[in-house]
Length: 111
Image: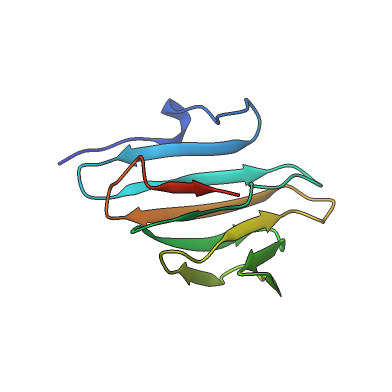
């Protein structure tokens, strides 16, 4: 068993970016926080499936050049090799839960 509280971790960029709550051995699990007008960063994965759950805010998610306006409560599963980004084109902070499986930290494809 492993337990963590969100307050025990930091966002990668201080007030925004990725905050991993669990890393391995089988999944990556965390929170992405985007300030207004901030992007996650376009990327993909060779073997990893990534799921996003939007629980605060309504940004755009772009998957293989197709844009989708999210709503709170939406979930998206992104398959391996699908390039994806999240753009907070709103005036509010966005928070998203992400889960990546399997745990392959070197699997990222940058564009």
